[in-house]
Image (tube, rainbow over all chains, first blue to last red; front, top):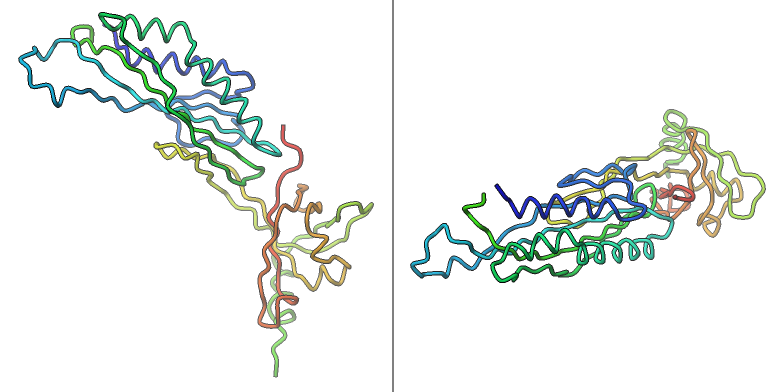
Length: 151
Length: 120
């Protein structure tokens, strides 16, 4: 059994947990206590294929390429949230894109090594709680082969 | 006859649910003793994630009667970055909102929005 999607998400959690100064790394938590900041949360991403337009006679259990878009939120609080958040963003992008395990997982799924990891962008959100809190959410795209026989 | 809302409304309310506080303006060695109403509330801060994740925090705040501040020599120019200590905690005034009174804003309340000191 091999579930590439789950392997990617599980590895992403390990990657964000390794970012310096992150106090809490979690998956899919939507209620983050301020005591856990700076926190990184990996949200399972939507999957999509191009198979809706595939009208060929290809057997349904043949491998198909999938694109998954997980979202990662980094939340922190600081006297002046800003450059700290930028630093966490740098580490996040660098570590995800260059992670050896993620790259090997992705590339090995495609017959021709045609998997891919892409950084799509990020957005920020700010608000006052006990102190100024900043959140950054970043989107990535993982392209890999979905092999029905391996599930 | 004009109703004195300070005497008939604010003063009894502050006497009932107000707590003692010390307001220290920037640069002052000692603070002024005043009465505040603790208005610290739970606050959810959105992260903007598509999953709707929120940070659970508190929004510290306090109501103060403007006539009391004026009587203690504290003007609006002194509000910013002042230290307000009450209920065992010490906060910094980060912004404020004037709450008018039928007798005019100088006889109403101000709600201080507060923040913690240095954050690690």
